[in-house]
Image 1 (tube, helix red, strand yellow):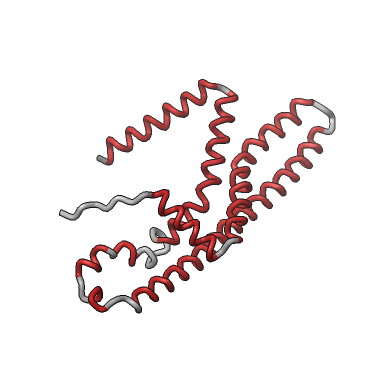
Image 2 (cartoon, rainbow, N blue to C red):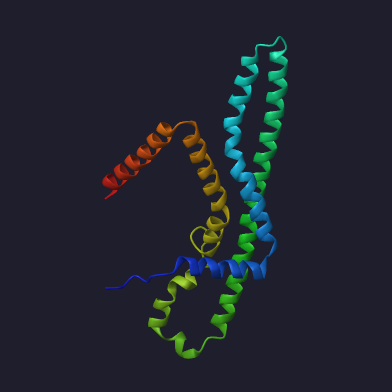
Length: 193
């Protein structure tokens, strides 16, 4: 029976970060900007109803005009933010493709200069099959891992922000959301096992 290899995830991510630093240092700046913008973007959907209700509660005579101007500015800012988030996400993914291609070049160089005894050794090819195939796919190989690691902090920040906001509004709401997630995960595990 083939035994599953164990990997230290943090060591792999550290090595990937070092490789990205050596090949494309500006990528870290792009990721930082994307993280800030993408973490703010989900909160825009909370802001519009709050603004609209606040304007309508004032009950002023020019409330309709103020509401239209506020909504116009909101849609302009939200649209610009959405364009920037999507553009940066696509640009980061494109640069990650470049990093993967550089990785493939390094791997091909190693394969070309490999000792002949390893060429004929089936055990060698079985042992390093995952490492060789990591560069072949952009969905679950090295590029997919770069994309997930680069785009994940924004999702984590927005999730933490939403949890803090829900907890500040109502602890009962936060508890009900946590219970809901636990029940969904339990039901999913029961039905899929």
